[in-house]
Image (cartoon, rainbow, N blue to C red; front, side):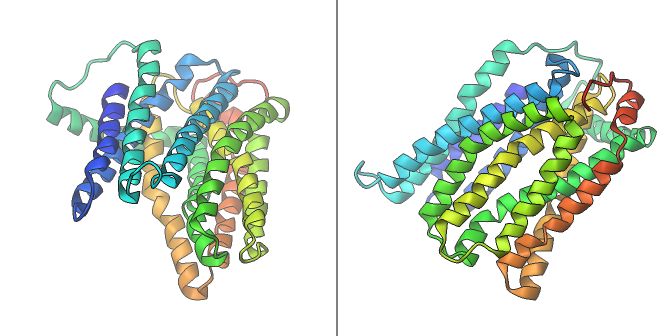
Length: 349
């Protein structure tokens, strides 16, 4: 399943090479297909985490995974940036350079998927539906059973809600960073691209740093501290002067430090509060809930922008998500949630 979804997404990404002129419908279909395949492959990918690491190793393994992901993405982005900036000297049009970059993303995805396919091993497959149509119906029934079963794990549900709230804030800040840079700070596109490139590489070290801090101070405390830092970083949006690229780079640097670690440690914690042997269905619920709630942050930014006509205030509105997420996570008794799920409580949670 990991290979199927990953290669379906990689092919869709490579297909974006053929989008030009008035083929915007093809581009839209391929973009949606690539994102659906990516989300599906990540469910399977995440569900391997409890199988390849003990409870004590979970934070370190998850952090290294996120860190390597940012490093790989940064390397490809750097190569694409060189191609894009030098397209004229290479005899390419701007459009062709962009199309080659999109194809390279699909090729990169397909190439590095080979590693987990060769090294990971399948678990025994339980009895399952025999046709595609029955499998789809069975999937929806399983989702219903998973949602119903969450009533047995109220603390897992509380953690899930906390994660969805603060992660929505994280994703919304990242998704609106380019608009903030261009509309509020009037910075050129080259500054935005190089800032994104810097974030990729700094996030590599940030994920490893927060993973190390989690071993010393506890995973929950580290995530809570990261949410405090997210609140402080977003507050900086009110004070970054227009046209000041250096200040924007400093803000992006601070985001990169906490970005990967927040995501990696949250994944590690979630893997501890779900029943053993049901990892895939619970991680699929996490993905569905994550994508289903993603519009809330975007809607909040849109409303704030409409009311104030200020991208600074719109970004500042994300503080609400970090504060609510902090409170909900602080209220979650993680050792009790882990034991309720039938798992061993590791040291430092």
